[in-house]
Length: 423
Length: 192
Image (cartoon, rainbow over all chains, first blue to last red; front, side, top):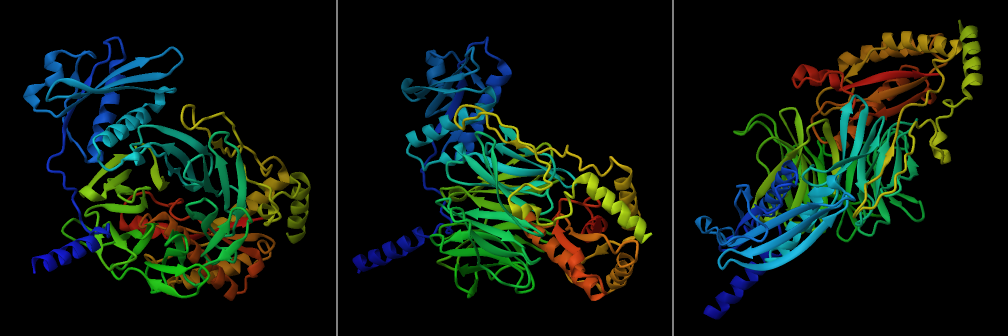
């Protein structure tokens, strides 16, 4: 009897374990408590040292795998007995850094990880980056490797570049490449209206975007290293590259060659277009699902924006979401779909947009946000992290949701309004 | 007036090399009148700087550089001032009954002798609610609805092109209902 019960329990738990929409708060009995010490020489720019500290603390917190001490602590790099234990704080780990500026502009970060229980050095490593303004990536790299070292689920997504468009004025926008905290930003396209940037491949060495500066909206591909751009296609009315297939060979475009917005698959090699949807209303925001064989998209075919799916080459359309009356944005990764839904007045305030997660395999639905306008969700590669745009108090921010720990973080944009994002 | 307009148009075409006349220019594989300028900087993802291309609207088509062009620009500006904007309800793209009369009036104006040689660009716009990708599609449907209404009132469909600007072109930037009402609209631009 016990054996049978055990089999049932295992079976049920394995079914649920397969579904990432089920709320699983990571079961770590206790998160390792960590403090960060600045062991740089006092001659090194103190403002920079503190900025570096802030990124490290932020990364560790966003990873959700550490109990982080916020206090900015100064130490020697070699460390005294007190500095190596910090017994009053009851720590498990100490991360100590020593920043060194080289004459050629390179920044070196010597990193020491100490076991605060015995005061011994666990490991030591040197990281470097060639440009000062890239220092956030130096910090992200350190945290990604530290995270791997303690055996926690990977946070490699922290090293991904984010690309976003921001409105700067009427019919004016810029395209910016940044890190996920917006601490590093580099404008790569400016002048006129340039929107909907989308990475062209996993390597993030080129991206697509739509220019509205010609007679027709035109899709370009830009090589980020050389700055060279190539015209891909133009369309009357509107043109958006909504998704790129995993291998980078196919694009999902929303375009309107005959004044009617529909979703098309564009083959990058053959330059052939295949029309996927055909509806007299709005079909937009296509995203590949199920090994790139199906497309999930937003359509108003029921009289309001909602999420539907269609196999490429088939005409049969499946409604994916049976909740909400205005579901206007969608993103997908493998079998998971995240969408934004406009809510009526609630105890949280008037008319918000919230994010929801569903699986294409089950009817389970999980609410991810509760307040404000949360739009334009985009999965990271690992399906445990979602980036989105949050609007509040006339400001826009990049939002990060860590699904396994039910936590979200916001990184506000100081100037301009975020139009669209990809990472 | 028609003769004058024809002469001015001819003069402008000579001066500007007909660059704006062909709406299919982008389909030829050229950038057309895209005013983007490339700036190339060596860059490496891992170590060096990221590059991009700066697109600057610095290249004038010469419209304001000669009298003929400026006369046409003035004629267009005068007409555009008299064309009514068409407003829409939240999340809708059907023409409101109170806007039909405005479109009928626009059709009359756009078919008048001093306007009928111009092409018409209908620009669809949205308020700030919703995701911008959906809003671009919604703006396009609004522009399409207006185009169809204009055609039903006798404007030639060959003269009309439509484009959506989503929420990128607000008439009002405050965050209140009156402002959002103003932003859900279609506007008209005339092209020589």
